[in-house]
Image (cartoon, rainbow, N blue to C red; front, side, top):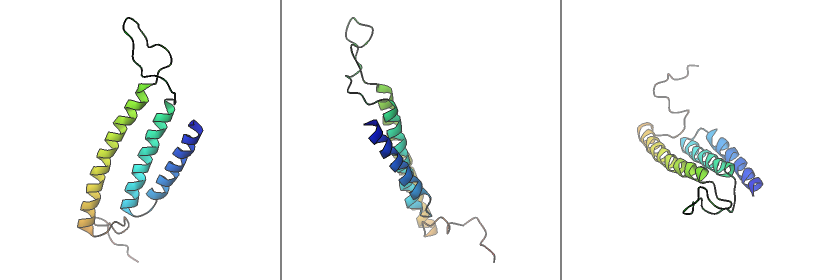
Length: 119
């Protein structure tokens, strides 16, 4: 299962890099979201996929009994999803504002502070 998820992570990273290499700001934003999803999946797979029980300690014992799931990667991924959604919402609003101000999503045409090419 880890091999299949590793291939999926590679496909997500390749697709995100392809989208981020374009000049369109909306495609860049979608590439950024794909890259964050690939990073989340990487963290999740690094925590090992086991069919373990929840890490609960029974009364009177110092440690859980048997094989338990690792809760740390799950907590990290959940936090990263929330932060990624906030970043996506903020970047989407910035992109909409840039489109209203400049009338384009092409990054080469967004040259308000730069001089025009001479020649």
